[in-house]
Image (cartoon, rainbow, N blue to C red; front, top):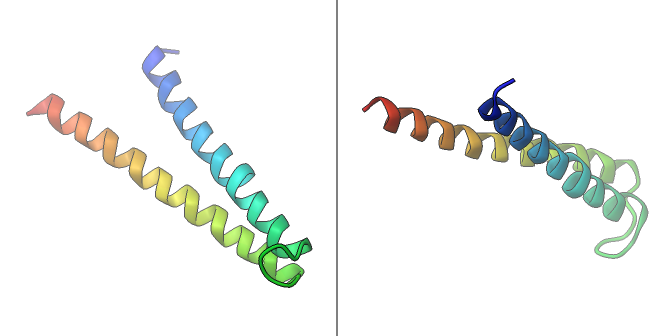
Length: 77
């Protein structure tokens, strides 16, 4: 496996790790089972967690794909 492929794979791995474990899990725990921000909303908090995680992952993937497209465009121009 080439170093370039490894770097691309690790970037995607870290973006998913950040999205699903750090952002999503924190939001789900805070909204679902604690009353730190709003009163406990139970299962709805975990649905919000799901949406937040997917949205964060999509934004990071879009950001990463824009970087890749700019690199490819600059290489072939």
